[in-house]
Amino acid sequence: MKEFKAESKRLMELMINSIYTNKEIFLREIISNASDAIDKLHYQSLTDKKIKVKKEDFAIIIKANKDARTLTISDNGIGMTKDELETNLGTIAKSGSFDFKEQNQKKENIDIIGQFGVGFYSAFMVSSKVEVISKAYGSDESYSWISSGIEGYTVKKSNKENYGTDIILTIKDEEEYNRYLEDYELKNLIKKYSDYITYPIKMEVTNDKKTQLETINSLIPLWRRNKKDISEEDYNTFYSDKFFDYEKPLSHIHIKAEGTLEYNSLIYIPSHASYDYYTKEYEKGLQLYSNGVLIMEKCADLIPDYFSFIKGVVDSPDLSLNISRETLQQNKVLKTIANNIEKHIKDELINMQIERRNDYLKLWEAFGLQIKAGIYNSYGMDKEKLQDLLMFYSSKEDKLVTLKEYIDKNKDEKNIYYACGTSTDQIKTLPQVESMISKDKDILLCSSYLDEFVFKVMMKYEDKDFKNVCSDNIDLDTEDEKEELKTLNENSKDLLSLMKEELDVKEVKFTNKLKNHPVCLSTSGEISVEMEKVINAMPTNESINAQKILEINANHPLAKKLQDLYQNDKEELKKYSKVLYSQARLIEGLPIDNPTEIANIICDILVK
Image (tube, rainbow, N blue to C red; front, side):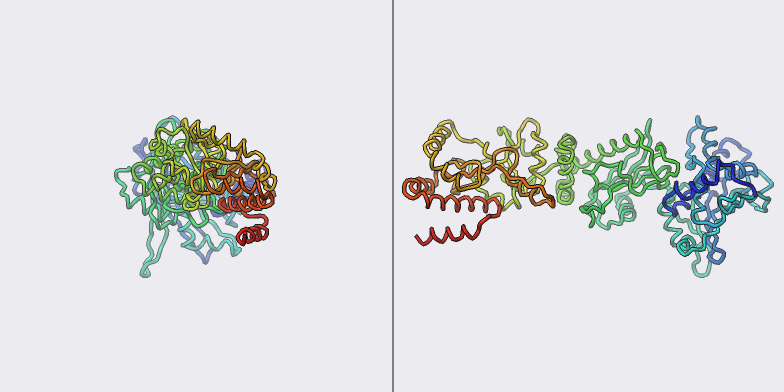
């Protein structure tokens, strides 16, 4: 028995136990090596006319024998001589594929998958013994390489008739490894990892007591086919089969990038959120392939969080993989692909918004919250990318509109007006909103808890400021109205001061902004009532209070009643103050701290 030529047995242990974290990828690695061996022979046949092979005859054959506990993977590729068996398999991290590619690096159309020389050793994760029987093309001799792991290996003559390589794995006895002898499991692994290997991967199947070879893999992936040859049904079927979603996607994007960076991608926009989408268990990411071999089930780096609902695949020969091909080295190629895909997604969403509004409304209902979160979570840094995708309910249009559509419909307005609440119907009943609508103002009715936070970090859209109609800085009065109101508040300073002392507010004042309602709550500063409710409802110890202002309708009969009470019954005025403040809080959806006291006060007032 010969020892491995690697520096130590520990390196072998590292190959088996540390580099690969997922045992099932052993089949992917061996199939990829078989594909490389066929590639080499096929390439040489193109340059050496003495080699008589036909591409259609190439295949990879997989056979499982439960009784013997063996799994055999055979190819009719270039095969290996005795020296090559010694060199390629006897030296860990020695890659014949890598050497072949290096020797032909200036030549085109060479897609060699295995380049690190360690994939073969993943077989020892599931095997107690590995035998490689190989016959090089054009040779009269064949040899067998046998190893049971770190102890070493033996090489001896064999009697293989045809050129190519047979890898015979003796699967470990433990029950957990039985699955690698089951046909259905092997088929699943082939479909999962090696479905797009460019040569047929065949398995023995028995039908009507006849055993025959059946091709398992799809060979040519949909994303590599010419777009004009693919029907809408083909795209939808692929989506359904690949992502287990039986509702048609809203749209798809087929990308074929060539030039300095080469990749193919097929991106889908789902019509609905998956059952776990808004849970912490959900994992974003696109399926990542290298030369048709699945590398990552979900590559999170390929899409930003705000497009995490996107599904799809990316296949590129230009990726820099780590030694196990399970993860990516961080590199500019990956980032460039991600940026390109993001741009394609946004362009498609804008096109859908313009050309197929009903489809976009479906998307917005399912994923609008995620897009809004993209602006808020980046503190507005991504607003230029996402702001044109936003939609809000317009009081005037009575439907969802984009910010651009709002501006186009309200060209004379200096601001974008909005109000927040639990639903559009509830927001419409707010006193400030009712008044603004009566003045023919278009209000964005925001029922999502994120909306106001989004407006705060955006600050502006184009040259328009966002203005909450429930804040104290909304000013639509004429100069005469302003002066008249200012005089009323100055003359009522003592009245308003007495009311303020009874309440937990920053200020009490008369206003002209209300139509029929006697009072409303407005806020001063950056924190609104809705923001206070959202933050205080979070499962943290954080608690904030908006600076509230109780505004009294100067044109309501109640204003005169309060003046009379101040002159004749200040104790009764205090009771009225508490009732009015509680009324304003209820309108805003805020709780009353002392409901029993307020109920008793109301009863006292009613019986007088």
